[in-house]
Length: 631
Image (tube, rainbow, N blue to C red):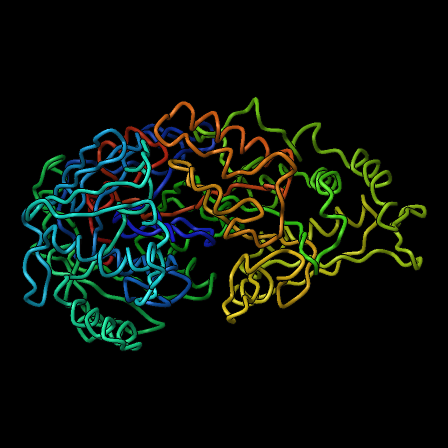
């Protein structure tokens, strides 16, 4: 699976609606209510003074919190933001992307692009694994490809159960050139390869650690991958060496994760921005508290028990108006690439009329996205229209049809459409109510997650709109996240595996029936969205709702053959996102902002104080505090 942006270069998730960021970094943009692209100035009349920039000192402690414990800390298995938040403090990853979506060094100090198909990666020469494994070399990366990623992505043998193997399917070969250089040859040219998530956030183990387990697997030992995950050196993070800003100290599950400043951190003093990295990181101890109760997290932030609530567990939208009144907390409004949408079940256990495009469009017309974004989410969201945010360079406004904003919020027009389209399915209106063939009012099941009150309130709003304007009774089911995915999103294939698309829509259905689904968030990858066909279309791996493209359109064909031509790629993707907006396989409801709060003494890097665009936070490890409120 893809990985998340953030200050220590980690994984992005398909279905987690939070963009993870560790330490004091953030992924996205910051701003005030008047201008979302400008940070607070010294003369702002908001009661918060900007701290001085020239007091970069190492402070004793940094405290933050997440709402959940890590689910898996074996780096191959990480597929949730809370796990990655912790491991990311110990391991940087290959590289980051700056605010221009350009390469910024991590373990890799330079990347050379040869004709969009061959990419040459050069590692820093001072990278050291722990536990006596020595220097990280290009051979470690070649082994990672040969024994782990190629096995899963090409050979179909995911013996280590790697969560992100599909990112690497575009690679044909990966070969070491010398100790610090490896070369990647892609199957097809891709001018956006550096922006894709395959390499830039990847964690790897020393080849010498993994090799004995790989040999066991080759000899037929089916438990080799499991035993690797349970290796003491893996469980205790003995392998991390100088590869991240902090070293693992201890973990008290369901309570706290503590890491200490890495005195041998490889990035210290390196160009570019050597002055910022000179003594990085700027905290002796870094603690992540696990605090499940929202009220407790907020109380700790208010009473200065926390340095920050970051985008891994941001400030809930309903708390934003409260936190804005706290003088000691600076609020950061971080746009997210996650599309939260309202899905229509077109599989055999859904409502049959949802296979009709006009019916789906009618349902989308009765949802006022501005009410959701501004009133329910308190401005911590903006209306969506397709599978790209409007700020993406791949969003073509001329191609996209709007729903649920301005005049496109049209309950009366929606009712007219249903009156025309539904009789062919045996449904008729009698006064205000929509009736079935037996004369009973139509009842549909709407399911959503029970995460925070705006999500629940949005579910209630959907139900009210469908009932009041379309005459349909709604059975609203609010369920835990695990139930949401296992019982509603996924289907079971013939081998018992749970998959978002386990087969044809007339054969594969979810364990529990549903008709409408709210609150699923999917990453739109606005920097490199060519993998859109993973999500949308009859054969798409994530086609949980069973949508089929209209006749004459197949998304893989629409984007084929454009990999080497960026202009052609923009045009093709613009057409795809326009098609999705018109077809409404889902109602692309909102794009959320992750609302992070930092103590006023926390100082971003100078560049991130002056410029605050998407990608802001890539220098997060260089952030510091002007003093220590915990002393």
